[in-house]
Image (cartoon, rainbow, N blue to C red; front, side, top):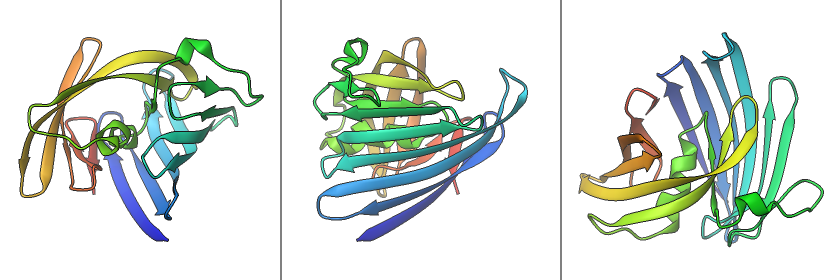
Length: 185
């Protein structure tokens, strides 16, 4: 089993994330903690999350907990169907493959690592957006365009609604720089 450890600094609101990922031949296990200042509520926030994926980077289950111990548990068939903690299907999330947890750049690795990309290739995705710290969920469209590669650093244009930026990732697809939001240390 291989292990990856990553530390990101939250430059947008002040904070950080420590992520640990373990891979075996069949599954990818991610466990992480984000600590940041929540400007909306003017207080510190803490999010713990665990994600289990298959070896194709398709989510099997996700568990997210905020500092108030509110918990969100979702499972997925990896093909666009999502279920709550009781096993009931969530049709409002139908078609979304990936999850986007608002307090972490790790979410960007999911669509990036699921595909082999060619320069100038553009892909549209439906994402399950989890707003933190409230843990509210909704389906949102996002677009990634593979812009360039230099010395093993790949650059993607990321778009969601009326927001766009350029994200730099390493060879393994983990964010190095999400301008003015996250930077890897």
